[in-house]
Length: 538
Image (cartoon, rainbow, N blue to C red; front, side, top):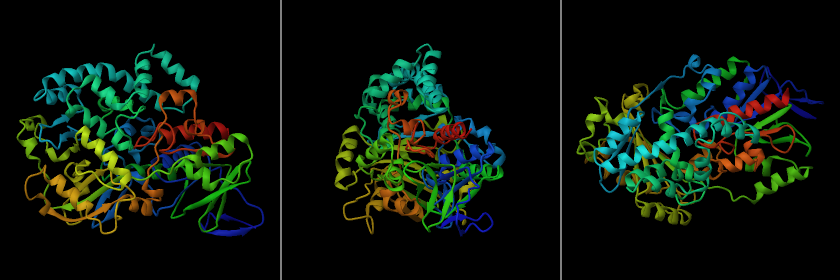
């Protein structure tokens, strides 16, 4: 006997032969899963999305706690704003609207040197750099001349499924402009690329903080060089914040999906796939319910899908897929976040003393995101301490108060909300996270950059650590998967299942942060996977 889902009740019922009224089941309600599902539903494909949590959004969601609303991860969106699905899925019509802080980011060091600001406009950015670092302002111009074509090509290549002919055609169409440097940087280290242009750590370290450090990689690791294009990328695509929090994006995606006839089921963890080693034909939920479908799109970490969900595969290619997944070391989470309700907004004396406040042109400096970067030596020490279960004395940190730019984010009692992220905070913290004083120490470290007494304005706070990400977001060991292959590897189709979205078992497709083009709130993977599924079904 098999169990299928009743459309009327959503509960399982016994049936001798599995009935199939679904074409596709999408597993995972993060932004990539929602984008994929919405495209399929709008194309007339009978689609159900199943999400383990009680609400959609994944790491892009906004959640309620402490009588306030907090973003699970960063509130700033960049690459996603360049994607065609903003119009294709009518997200504005489903409530998505962005606000823009300008400058988007203030870059600071722990050493007390003057900060600099990143504006959407490159000339205003260069002016902020030049106030205290004239030579670096000239270097930034030279950098942009080289990096813009790389950033443009990276964006072009991310829109559409990776395929060798298509990617080669894009390279040829640009007559090599940016192509050679993109391939060169993709093999280089982030440190080498950034130091080609800048000899001041104030310009080098923010590029590393927003690149390799966020990815969990050291800056001298080969293959991290495309971090060198990040500044240029953000001049091409304006950073914005959804009104109401990051989760407004995923709420709009869910509304687009259901408006097109898609079926959404939350609070339903998937335990495995329905497959016989030759073909996948549905999913099995944690309560034993079975849902039959012509295809399954898994948007979670591809490694557990291969190792825990698949039956013993029959084909040699499928066996290689499973063997590679089993050989991978399981990733450990390394990011933590303090969410707080505050009665005052943080102010930075080094910024107020820098003579740069006039560049805000009347806007509140608290609207911007603040990145605190350690020195390269301190970052090297952080990487050394991480596998020992220790946090660096001065970790990379990112702070923002989203409720200043967006008053709808204020707490129920009318106070501001604070987000403070810290890296690296290992999953296996020495002594464990329960009762740890580490989060309070991060606040103390951060407060050394603030006006005295600011910590007294913290009314209440919570800490999201890797163990909580594991429990609450179903991320094994608190780790968010990330596609790490270089553009050259993607071009050549290495690990094809991760860049072509089609697993080597018929009926199974892969999407999400662990597939091309990678992590972050981008959404290209979800859109690209939908195109592959549609071509296959047709």
